[in-house]
Length: 285
Ligand code: C2E
Ligand code: MG
Ligand code: MG
Ligand code: MG
Image (cartoon, rainbow, N blue to C red; front, side, top):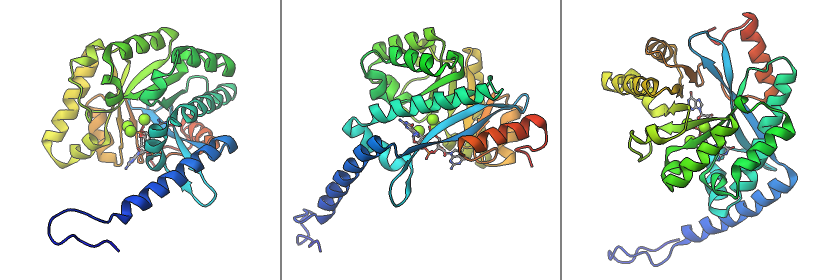
């Protein structure tokens, strides 16, 4: 047990740090193994077009199926980023997501867009746009059926280089979205310089919307600004009908959240899509 050092405020003995390092090391070993054994799995969360109620597509979210439990990305993506493993993991995710999109298209759902999260490191790898082009070719997915999500934070690290890369990606024809919009440091004016098509409003703003009118004003302003810049808007973390109604009135383009669908296996997503398209089932019920 740790002993406090008589009020000096200095910690002489830090078992927690040692344990943490050991845990991180174990987890890093586990991540290497997981890559070799393909212990990763994707789940898909529906995105709904508010104007029509149609299913626009789905965001691919990675899960790690370790021997004893399913580990969510918040528990291993930070370590994967620290160790560089996020690059091969991210490539696996991109391939797998595109392979699923191809299966959806083959099953008659060619209009669906699959969204994939990118970490800044992936964007920085040697000729990432060429990698994307190759994966699209290999899987036979139309470029405009793939959306790449980057966070504001990763976007501003090296601005000019980032803009150049995003330009190359949009030239291929893929859609670029800014994820977690509003939580980063970047000034709004950057949006004008960024070759992006969509912004995703962070769940924290959606949550605040129902709590006070200030929260609602911010979301309204972000939607108006995005539209005047020619961008579309997806609101994330929509959990209630009330939030959906407010966003609909504000002419938000799309929503994603537990209210319209939790992340699910690809097969379940296909069934979900068919249910909504045939009008037999609806996310409203
Ligand atoms: P994100 O890209 O912002 O993804 C949305 C997260 O919000 C997902 O968590 C999703 O399950 C959760 N969510 C969706 N709707 C709701 C809702 O109504 N309420 C609440 N409370 N949460 C909701 P998840 O799957 O745990 O992913 C967390 C983060 O991990 C993602 O945030 C993303 O930044 C990262 N991530 C996931 N997959 C990948 C990946 O393949 N590569 C990289 N680099 N990052 C990933
Ligand atoms: Mg995302
Ligand atoms: Mg997000
Ligand atoms: Mg995020």
